[in-house]
Image (tube, rainbow, N blue to C red; front, side, top):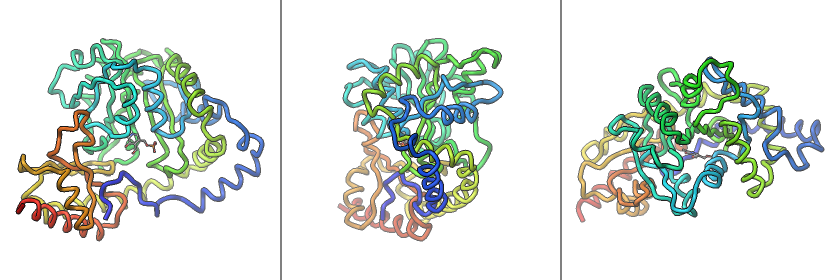
Length: 371
Ligand SMILES: Cc1ncc(COP(=O)(O)O)c(C=O)c1O
């Protein structure tokens, strides 16, 4: 029972529609999609992304957009462009494992922070080569950063002149409430009238089609100041030369057909039900050992052990013997020292399997506690 991964339910992948789009992409755009693509991405796709992320406060142009080989490459390029060996990263804690992996080769020093107003961001951001945050339903904590904290972070990034990486794979997965403004938009607002084009602020926004359409497309993007995009283009050349022209064209055609918008209501209903099933199962079987908050979106519940001696690395091992897998908090801690929490995914499995998984986990907790 895999409750560990950060995977969408494969049943949501729009196989029929994508098969049709892919066939048309090759038939109608053969030389383009089968050849090398531009490093910065298909111009029409960049235009489309610029339009999608423009709003009343930030007006973007193609110069602000780089197409990447999904979100992971965007994080890799952030490291390549901004990190010097042993440089400092101020990182939203607990921290996405993929980001930790992407920046490991530079052996960075981490300054963890929690975007809850408990610290002065001016101080925490100063001197960092960049700040990393996942404001929408963070991986792993599932937490939503509120509007005040978003504004304060953006203000601190502008004041201290620090790059602020807004990693946003879960912005389309709100199960309740209206989506909160992106840091990108708040930063555009601070830059002044929208006529002040192009966007030149400190936010580096990274997005992906992985959670809204399918991760196999490996299509993502960076939206940032033109000079940052230009630096990333140089870095990308030495990395993969270009993102697949075929999947870029498929992504563009899918966007033109409104595929993600059509899929969204079904995905939200499916995942909302699974989130509720997980939270109910936790209440029924693990409330004595863990605390958690029901997330308003995303893919994860972060459960914190009540007993400071309960080690979730050990729980993972015993859980595997019981046939269930969770992700222990140690992998999301840059020091590796947090053993007191776990990340549980609710999007991949049916409600029935989630309940069965939590029952097995409860058995594992009981076994661990009796040792
Ligand atoms: C916070 C965060 N950033 C980035 C990614 C990268 O996803 P992809 O490379 O599939 O776009 C993920 C994937 O789970 C994620 O959780």
